[in-house]
Length: 177
Image 1: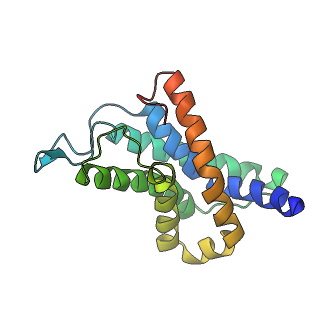
Image 2: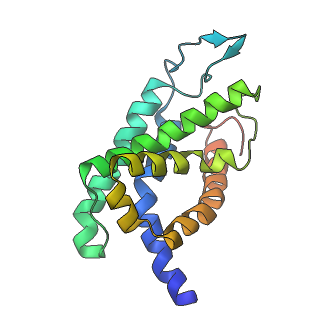
Image 3: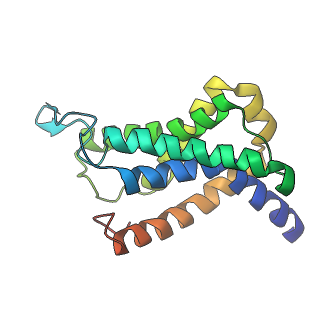
């Protein structure tokens, strides 16, 4: 059992890293013009100030750049190589999932920054998985085994809460969750 965890965990982290980096980078480099342009529907913002064009673009770029670096290191580390469409799908898909969750929160009347467990922790993973499956189904099914998916679903909430606390401490997040 421990042996399989030691094999699956690094593989899972390798495969999902572009999505993790995209999601974190959007927070770090975000700000500026909100995607919803502050438009309201029935008195509620569509997304809120936390979803910006700069965060979407720079977050996606950072996720893709990390994937390119992973491709360069794959030979040394034995990692999987990501085709360009896969990198873009993981990075953009992660942010699209996060944006979709914000839309749902606003429609439910949940304020920006309010906890929405477990969706706050897994929205970007769902977005990355769905986008990747839609654009590269064969690649997704080849590399994302059930063990890998379960591992990602277990470790992501833990890592998400940890990185959000760090973001809060350094002043990039308004709330520690």
